Structures are given as C-alpha cells and as structure tokens.
Amino acid sequence: DIQMTQSPSSLSASVGDRVTITCRASQSISSYLNWYQQKPGKAPKLLIYAASSLQSGVPSRFSGSGSGTDFTLTISSLQPEDFATYYCQQSYSPLYTFGQGTKLEIK
Amino acid sequence: QVQLVQSGAEVKKPGASVKVSCKASGYTFTSYGISWVRQAPGQGLEWMGWISTYNVNTNYAQKLQGRVTMTTDTSTSTAYMELRSLRSYDTAVYYCARDLGVRGYPLDYWGQGTLVTVSS
Image (cartoon, rainbow over all chains, first blue to last red; front, side, top):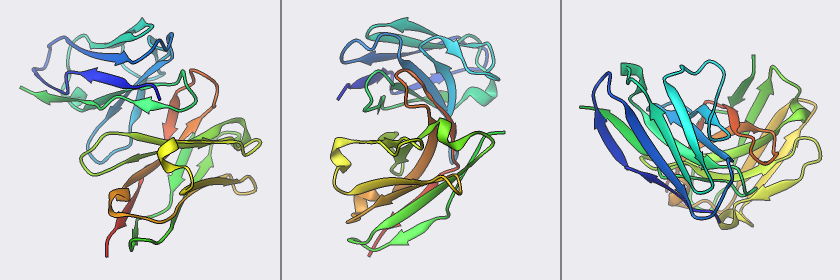
C-alpha cells in the first residue's frame, strides 16, 4: 500500500496567520492527491482534489500544490471556522490511503 | 442536492456482524461508486473499500478481506457494508462516500456517519 505521511501532526496558529501542511507519499502518485477538512463530530469535507483544484464552494484562502511525492495545503489567512483536522488522501492506487491527520488549533 | 443518509447507531457483541446502509439521492446512483471509510475514536480515517454501483465490482482493504462485504440495491439507491466477526477494535464511526472509482477522483460527498460500538 502507498503510505501517506503528514506533517506536522498538530499545529497552533492564530486568526489571520498563513498556515502550510505537508503530505508526503511513499511513492510517486502524480497529482492524485486530495485534501479534506474534518470538524469534531462531523463527516470529512472535500477541500482540494487533484492536488490543486478547489472544490466548489470552498473559500479561495485554501490552496494546494505539489506533484509526485510531496504536496502542501496552504490556508492564506486563517479564519475561526478553519480550526479543524486536515487529512490528505491518495487516489492514485485503487487501494486508497489517508495521511494520519493534522490538527489545527487556536493559539 | 446530493445526499447520502446512513442508518442509525448500532451496539454489537464481539463475534457478531453489523450491516450499515447508505441511501443516496440527488444524483444517478449507478453513475458513481461508493467507498466506505471508518474512524476509530480519536483516530484518523481508514479506507475500507469500494463498490461499483454499476457492475458490483469491489476493492477491499487487505486487512479487512474476508470479513467485509459491500453490496448495493439499485432499486432503492442504497449501498450496504457488512462487517463480520466484530472485535472491540472495530468500534468506530463508519462513513459512506460517493466515489466515481476513476483514478484521481476524490470522495466528494459523505454520509453523516454511523457509530458502531462493539462491547460485551
């Protein structure tokens, strides 16, 4: 299976900060990388697909980049509603795998 | 609008089976597959498998092979996930998600989740 590793596992930041989360794949996955946001007690929500495409309705402060094995999710100016856990997921292999998650907390 | 509505919470004893349903609406059911993802308490997301609603082809995570079966009922636009020989570590919230099943396609709509508790 393709292993997905996110860093950091947790992150403290303030409203208005620029934040970057990294996801690394154990082998090349081209641009087949998706990002999800999950709030406590809720289902995950798709933010970014194909590494850099913004899902409809998602604010433009979210952006994604990368290809091959290294990817990033950037939030340009944190808003109060952005404090949540973020997961990357590869859809290159038909056996999907997720990163372990990055919990974004208020400083 | 696209909706996936899952069945309610379940409590099962070790060794039992559970079957969770996921009823789809707002799109053509047979045009998209369904993936199942679970999340143990306080843990991350674990993909369990995928089923085509068109030809019932399946892909299961290796660690669940032999214990999980995914099925669909196109007459009611409902997908099902059955997990057998339950153990305490199967306690989790189980989600269904719409999945085209084409390389690169994301899990774009999710059900609300079904809590399955395994306890003696």
